[in-house]
Length: 350
Image (tube, rainbow, N blue to C red):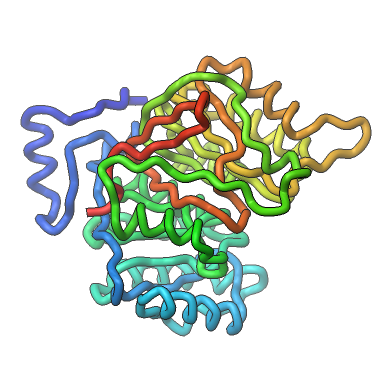
């Protein structure tokens, strides 16, 4: 593995930058230990822009599509989609080749300003080897989703350098908290932005929503992460995430505690996660589920992560919950676990 560098210096940087289209806002920073991609910032989203809707994982209903369209229109955007958005092939939203083609057409369409995944489910990982990453690099735009979309967020960033976004899906609830974070990151960015915190209402007696520090400290690094089970399934592939010197954000839903334990252990010992700068855990909704004898989710996570020589915190507002922040993969950030504060140190869009 090559060492991650903050800047590409000298003639190598000059020749690399010369190959990048003038329309891209890119800087000569290493963005992935294997590919050494230049970091690419997509154009910010503005009212009136066209948002392309895709289904790279599980299928959606016409009602879900209509509701997503209505949300976007109410937010001031123009929704756009191909007929394939409603395809179904078993538990997939169409065959692998068709879902990859839908993604390709959205990036190639110069009338589409941003791409939003309508839902997650399962299936994104099966199209990673069918994606035209060179086309994406030449046609950068905001790409957003979470859950199963973790596979695409991670692979696209590592293969192209494009900043991608762990944020709302089309089926998500665009409440005031979620919308404010969304706007601050992709519409009205700031050079320095501290992600807000809000505990979901009526969760006071649910420990899965607790906010607590596992290891005190501060960390700096580029952001990478997403759903644990998806990241775990990428291990050993050409798309395995590179965690070294990164701030890693993780979340999960509806997994028994022992399965969260197993997947987290696998990430720790089968990848370079132990070399991360810090770990930010979101809300692991419906994961404090135990058979007898019991071990709580909090204790299992603590047992695995407390021995690490890095800052670790649990309970920031992201994951399969209603009030979520938008997290840009590839952007530099700092994390203070004593204050449970995650701050973006650069704008994620141009």
